[in-house]
Structure formats: C-alpha cells, structure tokens
Length: 150
Image (cartoon, rainbow, N blue to C red; front, side, top):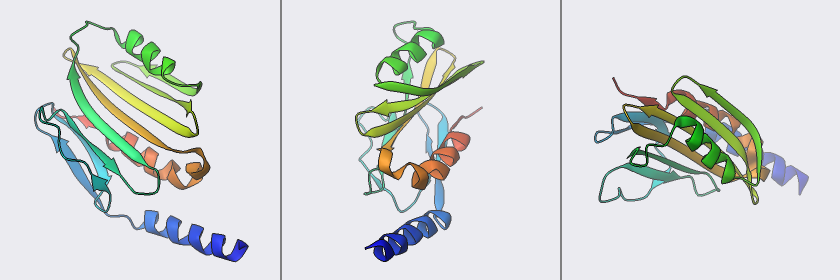
C-alpha cells in the first residue's frame, strides 16, 4: 500500500510540474489568471462575470468580477471573507488588494480580492486539506498570475 501511495503521489506531483497553463481572461471585467488547460470548466454564466474551473481531484477555482453596488470598503470585504471561514490562518492587505486563507470544513480556502474603480475582482480557490502539499504550487501560481488588465 505504501508503494502504491508513493507512486500515486509521484505521478500527481509530476503531472503538476508539467502542467500546461493557459491564460483565462474575462473581457467584461478585464482580468486574467493562468489555469491548467487540463482542468474542466463550467459553462460561463449568462452575465459573463467570470468562470469556474476544477481538476477532478478536489481543486475548485472560481474567478469573477463584480460591481461594488453596496459601496463596501476593502476592509469590509476582507472582514466578510474571513467570516466565511471556520478558522483563518493567513491574512494580508496591501493597497487595493487583500488575501485571506484558512479552513472551512475539511477544505482549505484561499481568497484574493482586488478593488479597482469601484469593482471587485475575486479569485477563490478551494481544495481538500489532505492535498495541501500537492496544491501549494498551484495556488501560488494562480495568485501570482491573477491580475487586472490596464
């Protein structure tokens, strides 16, 4: 059993090392993020505010834009994101963005939000806690490539 698990883990890690990423850009809200072109994706919503991706192993990536109709401050949005979690393990706020990460049930949740021109741009990643080590590099890449277009 240990050997099987070791081989499975090596295959999983090697597939992530050689993953082929492509850029998903949203023309309506003007943002982009790199996603693995092997991931499944849900149909774009009618209002074309973003997209949802999944890898079939438990990773789910949601990315979208939304107008700040409630005139919520970035600090208020961060507070709301933290309240969605059972336990917050990381938080940071700089300039026009924040990151909140933690646990909700048996999942890890990572949220990165930009506020620009009264519009929110959100990247929400969830994955099983048991696969944290396997997904760390993916979360880092998604976070670094998530950006607002000029």
